[in-house]
Image (cartoon, rainbow, N blue to C red; front, side):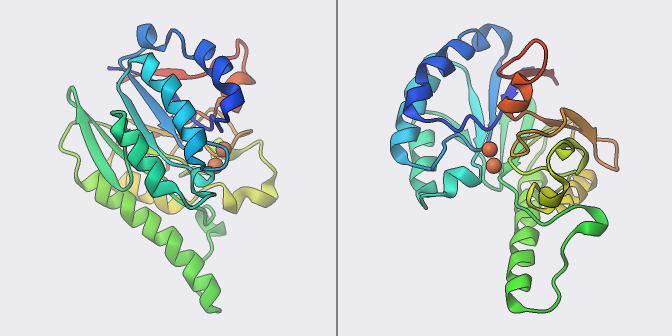
Length: 235
Ligand SMILES: [Fe+2]
Ligand SMILES: [Fe+2]
């Protein structure tokens, strides 16, 4: 299966024409499109409505997770409903199988990487924050444990490893993802992991278990030569 993957469209109605041109040929290039979160800029249903008008015209099976921006207006449930109604497979701690390839997806959360990960100690506010990070990893665990295929793709918004966020200011590293997600991925095994969120990160990295991780934030893809709107992966 050829998979086109992108993230962080941060769609606003005025970007409709640009998006249409960028994704014009995606159906010839791939069998399936992954959108790894931050589909909208402010999580507004009006943004999603215009985006969906563009996406349905691409006529390509689409798998998506939401990103933090899609939560901004607290309309995430409505956004997921709108996407599902247009045939997009929205993964939120869930799995999807198509043509022998399994997709496990969830937004993920912040929390930091490796020894820099925040731990549940001290004030209740810290514990609640860490709890949210652990819950995000548990959601991924639930999604991955549903996979029955040998080929497995993980879709996240937040980064599961630090190396694909390199290039961003080191001060914000803990807010770009969580290595708790990578622990789950290594435990269950996968062929491919894609994420977004780190707009200025690095394209490729590996989990400690040597599973390839790719940052597909569109800003990053467009800063490459030649600039592209999505990357193609063969699984
Ligand atoms: Fe983003
Ligand atoms: Fe984001």
